[in-house]
Amino acid sequence: MQKVLEKQKGKFLIGYCDNSEDITLFKSGYLSETLRITFYPNTIMSEEECSIYTSEMKTEVIEEAKKIAADNFEFYKNFDLSFYREFSGYCLGYNLNRQLIVINSSLNIKSTYKTSEILC
Image (cartoon, rainbow, N blue to C red; front, side):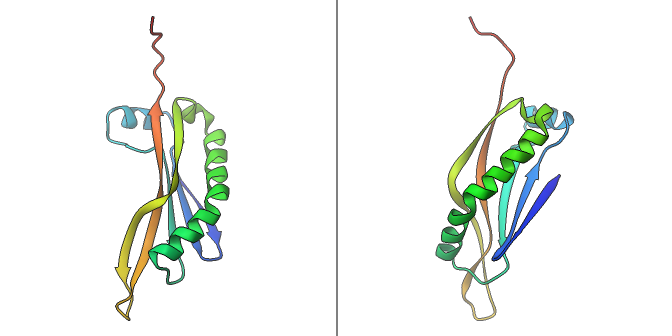
């Protein structure tokens, strides 16, 4: 599933899991992330400009992702989520003036499956 947050300089796409079948996919290694946040600028941005803007928006976007996880508690109760410090993973391209621009950027989120085993 996904939720789109439309903002002044682009959109943030939050991809998330919403059913228990996705747990099997994660445990088998087919699914590596249970949450993914990607920013798609709607204006020409350099990597530096994108970094500044996403840093300004990060808290709001993470809060929205946490709400999504809370709304899908039956799935996310099985995971510990750690949000990284900044957006990275830039996908770059060139505009018509051969200027290097950001196509998208993502915020990495570490998903760790909670085991139900009791260790002695």
